[in-house]
Amino acid sequence: MSQAALAPELKQPSSDEPVVVFENVTIGFENKPVLNNISFTVKPGETRILLGPAGVGKSVLLKMTDGLFRPDSGRIFVFGEEVSAMPEEQLFALRARIGIVFQEGALFDSLTVRDNVGYRLMEEHRADDEIDQRVLEALRFVELEHTIHKFPSELSGGMRRRVAIARAIITKPDLLLYDSPTGGLDPITSTTIIELVIKQRDVYHTSSLLVTHRLQDAFVLASHHFNLEANKMEPLPEGQSDPQTSFLVLNEGRLVFDGSTHDLVHSDDPFLKEYLT
Image (tube, rainbow, N blue to C red):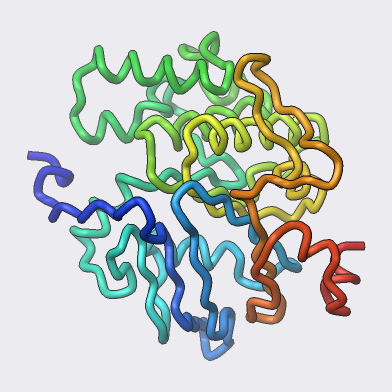
C-alpha cells in the first residue's frame, strides 16, 4: 500500500477559507533571525508575489509553507490545517496538494521528460495509461509535448523550467509555490515562464505564492491576463492590475508591505521607493 493511502485525510477548505495563513511566524538559524513576526494570508485563487532583497528569507518562507521548516514561534495553516504542528505522515498528504517550481528546475537527469513530469503519479502507483494521459496534458499546457521522450540534458534552460512547471501542475494542485521560476533565464525566456504562470492563474485559478528577484516579471504578472481564445497573455488596460494578484515585500526579516499593485507603486515608504527604482 502506498504512503498516500496510509496518510490521514486532510479536510477540504471552504471556498472562502484562506489557503495559507501565517500568524506571527518567527524563525532563525544558528541564533541568527531570518523571519520575524510574519503574518499574511493567501485566499482561494489569489496570487501573492513575494519580493525583497536577496537573503531576506523569501525561499525560507516557501519551505515553511510546505512544512519543510518549522517556525520557532507562531503558527502556519495550509488548507485549514496547522502545518507547523503536523506529523510527517499528514504532511505527505498535504504536499500531494501542493505543486512546487524551483529556480533550478530540479529535474532528474537520468529520467525522460515523461518520467520527470509523471514522477509523483508513479510514486502513487497510478496506471501507466493514466500517467501517459496526464503527462501529455501537462506538457501540452506548457507547449512541450514534443519533448516527452527527451532527457533534460537535451533541453534548453527555459524548456527545463517549463517541464518543471508541467511536473508541478500534473496533480492539479490547490496551491502552487514558485521559487524564483525565472532565475538565471534571459528576458525573453523569462517572459515565456511568466506567461505560463499567468495562464495557470487565469485558466485554473490556482492559489499561488511566487518568489522573484525580477521586478519586471512581477509587474508583468500583475498587469496582464491570459486570453484563452488567443492562447496568449495580453496587457490589461492602462492603470489596471489583476485583482487576484497582490504583493508581499520582506526586508530585514520583516514584512514591510502587504497589499495591491496600486498601493505598492504609490507607496511613500522610503525603502519601497528605493527598492522599486
